[in-house]
Image 1 (cartoon, one colour):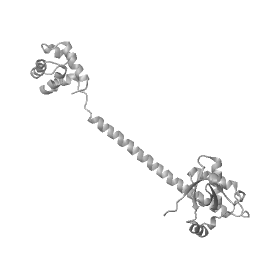
Image 2 (cartoon, one colour; image 1 turned 135 degrees about the horizontal axis):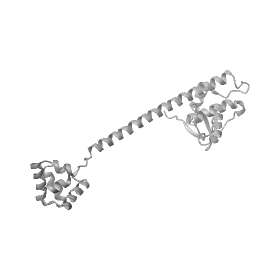
Image 3 (cartoon, helix red, strand yellow; image 1 turned 90 degrees about the horizontal axis):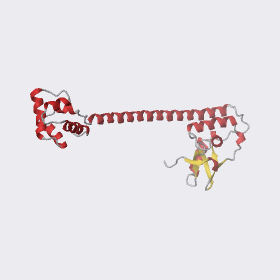
Image 4 (cartoon, one colour; image 1 turned 90 degrees about the vertical axis):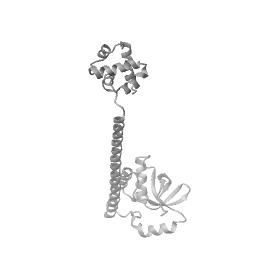
Length: 240
């Protein structure tokens, strides 16, 4: 279907029906609902009178409620939804107005503002506004839940990646548990002599694990404090 609601600046619209035909209380009430619902659920039907001006064909009450909404909040009430009668759809829209929306033509001045007609109409509009608000609130809640799930998935993914990162190896743990090949690969990078590496490995295998770094130095002939510090620093660099 090609017919769709256009958004028109309220200030560019005029009505042939006096505003005094409608109760200020009713207009204020619907204006607040329009602002609260961020739009009108019953679009106006307008006719273009120039490139930037329109005249209300149907929906005079809605127009004045929209105008009041603009007075209350210029930013939120600047635009209003409407169907625009153009030359290509004039006959079809006018027929729809005649058959579907005749009951919504402006309330005559002799009808009391607090009459059953006015009250019924207001209740109908307010009910539709409430339904729209309920749908908006439901969608907001759905988006909030979706965001929570996304955040949870991100945290789970971060935890998973963190668990995949190699855990830091304590130097003494490596000296006590790594095989000769792995020790050689690691310590040769910091220029520890292969003979010293073999002594560290063989001494551990023959006489048990080392209790401290000083214990390593004491048990390995030719291993000085400076070389031991070099070994410790190599693990601090985080490379295996």
